[in-house]
Image (cartoon, rainbow, N blue to C red; front, side, top):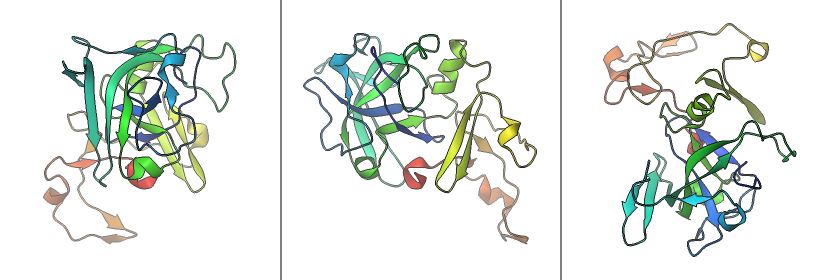
Length: 228
């Protein structure tokens, strides 16, 4: 939920990126070619706490002196792309419907992209936008932790046909079929791990271990623009 009063915004969750962005309306930069999604475009003029970021305020975007705003864009491996300007407003994580008072003690300031243009699967997807969830300081779990709403910078995702679960905070063993397994992360902002081998069933893929760590390495990526 975003803004004051809150407007519902739905997003796909991407562990391979860090920017949150969704279509906006309410000024001369309404999102163009952005498709029809679950919710109406976020109305910036209807929120009393909305702020477009300007000179000296850009966090993830780059200041455009002509437009007097922070411009940002993101492309994804499957070919989709969006363009946006950077903004800030009140966020809280809630349910399908806004309940008076529920978000009052869980609200925090969050910077995001107000999309002005979309291509590819962003036009046709059901969800309004995307929420990047890698290990960047401006992602949801980091901000929830900074604002003492979460005790841990942890989250988990469980995929299931017909739906799934995203758990914010430490793992919830009640929804696990087996014990958690842990591996060390390599340094960086992605969830990068060292892979020694890959097996399909009991059969080992005949590939040298060095291949799996080539380039940026093996990233644990929800691949949302592909999998949603």
